[in-house]
Length: 188
Image (tube, rainbow, N blue to C red):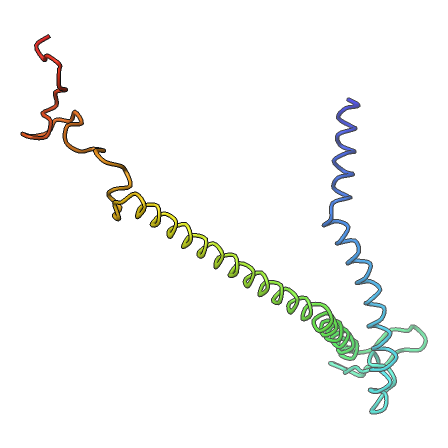
């Protein structure tokens, strides 16, 4: 029972210390901090710019769908149906700003880095392939020089004289050894 608990704890520890989990935790923490920065940017810069043309806050922009959109001061309830499109616009701006910052500061530089790295790897493989081809050419030249030194000059002389030729003991026709070895009596 204790071995099972130990193995479960070790497995959990291995899961937590894996690179993926730690990277994900860092991404969540940085994402939360970045969300605060974007929200502050929208509330501190975008909303005042919009306030120059209308209300101070985008959340105050709304339209009334039905009836008069007034708030009863005694109960605090809204009369009519109000559409708060200003808060949707504020959230959309926050999303667009976040997406632009993530794309231009993280995704685009990483894509350029990976493309540069792949290009360098391809160039390195091209050099390696050239070296392999030239090595193969050198080996072919060595082989041809050895063949020429043996006097054959052709590929048939590589195996040496008499290999697979007449008199080897195969079942050949007339004049090719006949399959019998010299000095042996076939009658025995």
